[in-house]
Image (cartoon, rainbow, N blue to C red):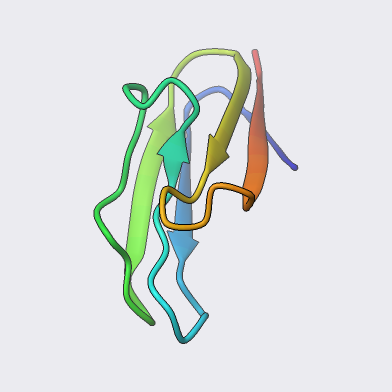
Length: 69
C-alpha cells in the first residue's frame, strides 16, 4: 500500500526477471502494457480515493494506492 497526496505521479519499475503489468481493478482507470525487466509505467492520481490494482499476468499479485485530498 502506498499513500500519496492528490496530484502525485507514481512510477512503477519492473525489477523482476519476468514480465508484469500494473492494472487497476476496474481495468479502465490505468493499465500498463507488459513491462519487461527495467521497464516503467507512470500514472498521475488527480482524484482522492483508494485505487486497487493487480498484475494481469499474475492476478494474485495485488496492491493499492491511497490518494488523499
